[in-house]
Image 1 (cartoon, rainbow, N blue to C red):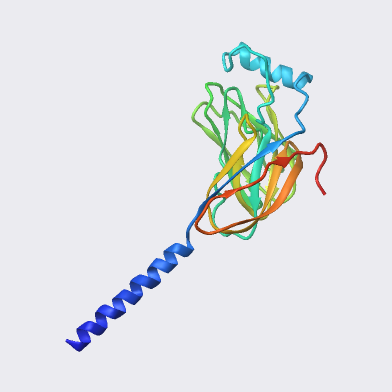
Image 2 (cartoon, rainbow, N blue to C red):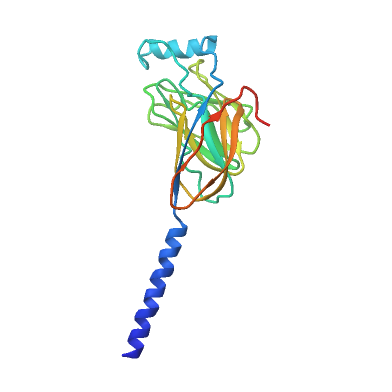
Amino acid sequence: MGERKHWISFGAVCASIAFVALGAASAESIEGSVRGSSLDTSSDSNQKNYYWKVWNGALPEQREIDDHGDVIAVLTGKFTGPPIGCKFAFRGGGLSPSTIVARSGTTIRVENRDAFTHELSVEGLAGFTPLEAGPGKARVINVPAGGPWELGDQIYGHIEGYLHSMRELVACSAVDANGKFTFEDVPPGPYSLRILRGSKQVASRRITLPSGRALQIDPLTMRNGREK
């Protein structure tokens, strides 16, 4: 009987250790927003992009606004798992978001969720050949260190963007029309939050995600030039 009690006690200790281990692997969310430094929506490139979408039925005809489609929020830091939320696609006649990020030395997929066939090009990236990808297909890009590289479409000239390579990429989040972004299922710890727009980093902040609760970040102000 004494040995039986000892075994039950040992089992309780094992259960306690397992619970602690699971707790250590918790993941939380980060919410924030960006403001300022709107692009000039009267530019020729933006007008061509917008009216192409109108003429092809991808958008209703209305006044264009700065929808932050070229802005992405990323986290960098010490993390060995696959990048979180870094998914990119053609949607609505364009690349969404048009600024995309991959971890250096890995591959990234760009899915075609459009009704149109696209032929993605990556200017200056050795070994990448533009090929047509119809609806439901994807292009895989091998991303070395370096960049950023300019993105385009051999079929639709209005499509443009940039590909960034980051050595310690942890997570990605698109920025919505109101300037808000959310990272989900991120392990607690210290990170660098970076805001990328086109070829540039336009804001950054050091943050620490606590265990057991979400983190709300004060708005970041985007700048025209690269932040030092």
